[in-house]
Amino acid sequence: MAEAAAVQLTGVHATSALGRGAAAQLAGVLAGAPAFRPVRRFDTGARRVDAAATLPEVGDLPDELAESVTEACRAAGLDAARRAGCALLLAVHGGPGVPALAGTLAGWTGLGGPTRVYTTACVSATSAVADAAALIRRGDADRVVVAAGYLVEPDQYALFDAGRALATDGAVRPFSAGRTGLLLGDGVAAVVLESARRARRPLADLLGWARAGDAYHPCQPHPAGRGMARAVGAALTRAGLPAEAVGYVNANATGTGHSDAAEAAALRAALGPAATAVPVSSTKALHGHALEASGLLELVVTVLALRHGKLPVNAGWLGPDPDCPLDVIRDAPRPAATRYALTLNAAFGGANTALLVGAA
Amino acid sequence: MTGPDRATTLAVLAEAAWPEPGDGPPPPLPGYLHSAFNPLVAAVAERCLTRAHRAVPAPGGARCAIVLVSADGDRASAAHVRATVAAGRRPGPLFFFQSVPNSVAGHVAARWGLAGPVLCLAPTGDPRADGIAAAELLVHDGDADAALLVLIDDAPDDAGAASAVAVLLGGGDTR
Image (cartoon, rainbow over all chains, first blue to last red; front, side, top):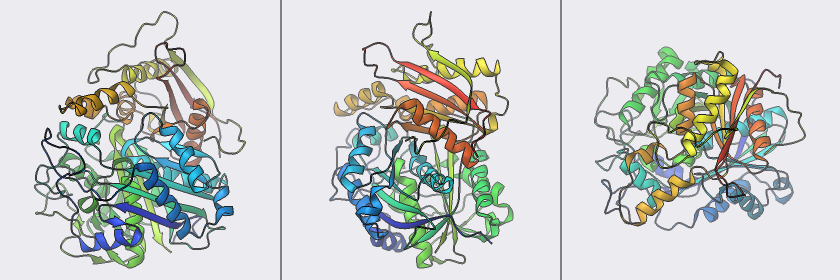
């Protein structure tokens, strides 16, 4: 059994093409209908692919981040006094003005503690969550807000299109035969993490977390999922849980050929025989890939699904891929068999993170 | 983010800068184009790790993180992509692969066998202090025993050339 959690999630909020707010995310992933549509936000005439998961009525990124932070703090029951000393860890795409954005956002939302900005690609948000947990565990902070945001915009869209990373058939098909790539999606999310001593409304325990590298290639994962396997193993060790206790994996799987196969290999290496028995899905097939924010959106979805007791489907499934021998959730949500779940993320640079949560 | 008053507990095992006296621009880095950002990271990391270890791979690299600190990231490449997209054209595919600083961090990690966490930050305080604080947290938390910290100044106040510092941190006890 895991020890009493030192770190708990006490408030969450997210906005994606599935809707605005936590309830909309849960309803959307359990409905199982992918949110990909032709792009109307900007011209895609010069692109090979015309599909993304965008929310029609969306503000600019600072405003959306402020809403998510405010709502997550409200859900956690943080009044102005409790927010005053709260740290803010922000995950966004790097660029001019980004360091100042953290200060602006903290000011708008009344978070008066230290700030840090993560620009480490698709593990930005989950690296921030891991660091938040580490800060709480080390005694540096009692309360940390992690916020992350990416709204689909023309530059990254064009780059992913130029890199032939986007799915050419309008669907994301993680771990499936016939998968052709990823599709981008809006994602803005915030979570409140608190020490168990301070938490008044725990939603979930953050029991395990880890970050590890592949040391293999600038942009491609190690074919055996070397870093991801170490991250999963370290998260389990920190949580004090056996592989068999994990009842769900929200996988990083982007619908990309070699990347999904590497993740499947990592799960086999880290979980052993349990890898073929644990239910797996990637909710990116529903809400798209929110890049720097993807891990936080997926953490929110995972926590909500665990608490609800139903695990979301892996949309876009066409058939099994022998390189991904996993128990992929197809057709309909599946009842959660345990209260524990992993949510995994990987990024360029061979960066990997694993977060292990338990429904409170 | 440097957090509460906490003594620096990791030792500086090696340090390098680019440029140092006699340096010109960093050597081109195959697979990367248009901007000095990625060659600069690779050159300063190579110099620091060579001073520490003489040759690849790095001993103990399996537990060495990379922490790359840059205020704005690769501004030149981002500006080129923005202009290309605004003109209705397609950016070259290599710009996709260098669109995030993780990419060149992964290049360094692969070359030297650094299999600890890969972390890129935009500093909200003093870049060196922020980077050291991030490295110490990774070590304290158990995901690394050492860290290569790379600090990029891509927008020098004096309009000079971009510069970088790399610091190999380790050997301390942060627990």
